[in-house]
Length: 345
Image (cartoon, rainbow, N blue to C red; front, side):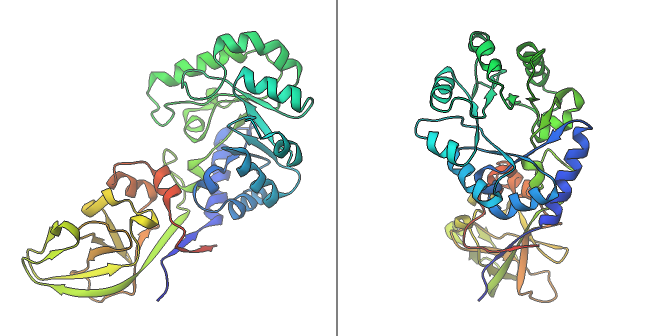
């Protein structure tokens, strides 16, 4: 029996980048965030497609991701590393021409002593309190850092997916206060920041989740399609239960399909019977709990039993599943499992 098939639409991915590039405006470079194995969709294939589309600056979470990306892309594109220059990273940064985004005085000391003259960027903390130099640290280091010619000075918005949150304006002002007048490219906006408008764009934007079809980019084309085979069907009498915990009871004669995917494949257990799968355009509700390798689905209303059902596609995106599982689309994307047969179009 065939495995579930995860299809990644590279054409839709490229179209989403082009749309976000257009939204970033003229004179602004649009990069791409491909951390976490390109949000779970396959670093090499995704990055090569984006490179062919026109991306020249990529962002990863840590150095080993940068190494894998350089091997996939070869020389040329800039590869920025969010975690900066960690202890033990020096040789890889040098060998694979990576650009660490330095987050602390300690990282700056390490980089300038070990790789003097090597490219770097700087990350500033404008209020998220996660990574980057605090304003007082930046004031102390600013002259020395700018004298070394950073490739990028950046910060990260905490609430960009909530356009009306006053935190956005506070961080924007803090970024201006820390960077206005410097002679280095600046970046503040990821996907949500791009959609906040041109005040947030500066010299470079760095879309991530919007490339892959996720919110807050509501106009994104769906990139991920998940088709799951039916293993078995059975008729269930009124009063009979389905699945672990007997949590679903038939109140009338029902036909139940058992399909080949579960929480081990990234279909989060919490979504339970709050979501649906699709037979063509017809929704079919889950019946009972998500188990490790299987889902049970009510297909009583179908005229014919299909050979598969669709979990992700044009009818239902990653954020729909995320809502059912009380999480976010990022977690759905990055959890999609290794057992799927992956196909790229």
